[in-house]
Length: 252
Image 1: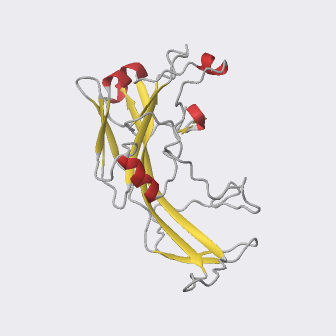
Image 2 (image 1 turned 45 degrees about the vertical axis):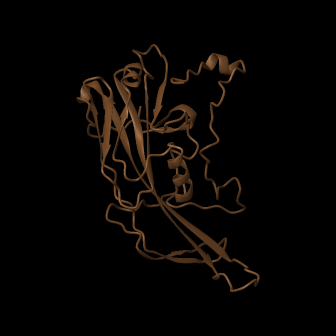
Image 3 (image 1 turned 120 degrees about the vertical axis):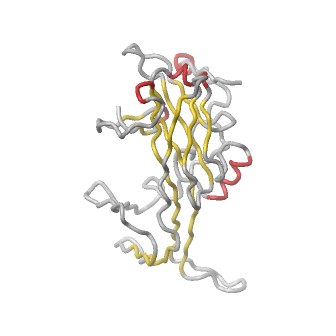
């Protein structure tokens, strides 16, 4: 059943391909500005400082604000190890992706996009994912809890944590043109906290606050004929762009 061809002219006329968007992968949005009376984020656009490369999450944390109770919890899980991915064009023009096995990873997923620029004449967008079935997003490019990832592994939508390579078919590389860019995502563990502790028996549990810490690691994939099949050094920064379905692309 591959490839699935989406003609946007037909979509505009109401002819949407069946099963275009799968419901197999949920989008996890537990807290957002849209569903919360009060919402803050950090680091934010008002000057919040990003953690440095030597930062650690281990130990005690405190979240204080003027919109709720102080939140205190202790983390035993540090930042996940970084992903180091390489790509190599094979003799049959397929592309092999290899990466390091990340400790505490619960599963991996990869995607690439190509064919977006054919000498300024436009053209088809070719989107490949490592899923064994047709999947267009959901939470695959975001954060997913371990229980959801484990279920998606049984459906061959997410690769298991023991896997360290996958192969992009030659047909995809040929249709994508000279360059493909994408992402490799490693899902990680989750830690949950609440206060006060749950009382024994059937006593009413009046929860003051809950906290959820979810982990992942991800890296960019860049495949092109000029790079000899390998992932090059990071290119010069340009304006940020969005790809299909609003997925952010590194540069354009």
